[in-house]
Length: 388
Image (cartoon, rainbow, N blue to C red; front, side, top):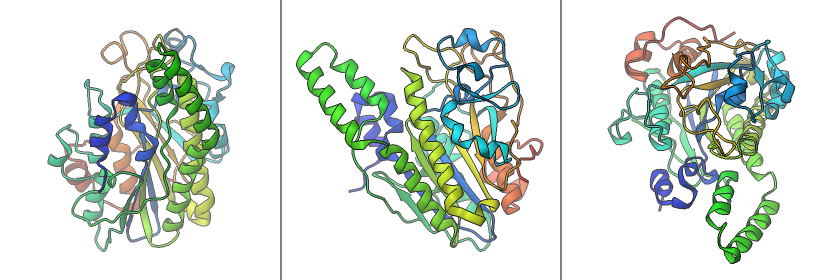
């Protein structure tokens, strides 16, 4: 019986909201499309902290908001442009930045506001419709609607690990499923929650600690290997007839001990992107990678060395087809009066607009279709010049 991602997550009370980023729920989807350009969309499940990944150390208000989190080049981050710095865990991608094949968009979000639910936020991100109606009432996923707008397109398959196919490619275009081997294991956040649950019970605390230690030793860097494995398989398909791929990387929910949580997640993301580049070979020059998350996190760190669910976040883009080595978009500032609801990074642009402009440039999709059918209600605004 196919396990519903939503049912599994809502029934897994132990790991709470971080279940939305559980490793078993990584999914991968593909579709065929005409032409030589290739689009890869990576869904970062769990609300990636864009202010940690792309650190605006040049903003004088950042250090006061995050006194113990890594802030800027003085704490190991890599300076990008004198204002923004790259989290140290993404150092393996720095050569791509230097080559113009890596870029970032700060202060973006979907139209989702205030409720801050992983489940609804991820559904809205993949549906791309601009509202948080139940997914059964949505119009499928936005990549599927893109396929329906492209003549001569053949939807190939949707792939998932331990879950249903990704919502982003559901819709009228048919899809199939494929799943690599999966192992049940705990995310770093789930391990922290287990420690909290068993803290006052000596017998269970010691047993849980021993089991976690054994599992961690056995797993090693399996999470990074899983992400690389998905990317490797995606590259093999993209080198053939496939032109659009989407998969997810989990583990971004960093309510506590954020350096540990986000460091491991960023390692998985870096490995996935580098594996795509290696696997695609010459086709990397025709590839655009967009890494997107359901929402950002609070501007202020919390008392547990982490951050809570927020609004504005960041998008990463990579590939030989992009105009990288730069930050695209406006910066709203982190002053008290600049924050959304007094707590979150203020979004300056709809993240869907960047996806729309990527599809416009790669596949020639009409602006009217993008703003009314693929992303209903979207105002794409001016061309940000993402593609080379």
